[in-house]
Image 1 (tube, rainbow, N blue to C red):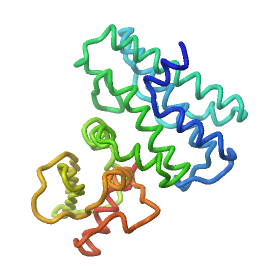
Image 2 (cartoon, one colour):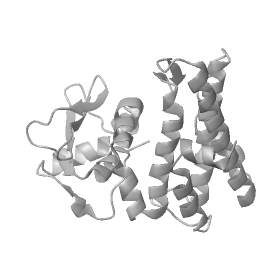
Image 3 (cartoon, rainbow, N blue to C red):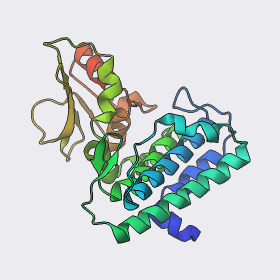
Length: 256
């Protein structure tokens, strides 16, 4: 497959690659427990798993989504081997997604991490991974902010990733039978993102703006908050919700 075809399907790949290659593999990142090398291993494992699950569905032999232990073989590679594997797995994903676009109905339900998604999810999710983890490498540079501000990435996070974004935060809240957390994340001129948690479970979705926002910000900052991250400049978000409400909403939004 030509590089141009890969770049067309994953337009964020080049910016991620440049950012990763410009840093030492052992350099720290905004993802506190991971170095640059850890992020590349994660991205490689994610690309492989997205392609593996989609290919298995097309073959009529669906498989369960593996957890992050899928990254172990890549973590054992040398830096040069890992980088080659990353590019190869991205190419494999693009090939698989292109085949799926030709062979499957756009509405086909494919199982991914305990829920169903459509074939278009697989390449788009890799695009989101490239944007988000590039921010982990660079922080709030202009390329990161521009990519995070695009509406498709918020749409993807809320509608096709959704509830898994809240699972880690929910597990640490200890709400009790009558406890409830509700947060409205607002970007002026767009629908709110409404997140809730109570004894029954969690929800996330778009809602018509009404009443006060829990947090108001630009779109890039809201996306970072949804994924348990924070912009380097805290003045990019605003809140009148009060410390207790804000603490609980931010605890719910702890990311994976």
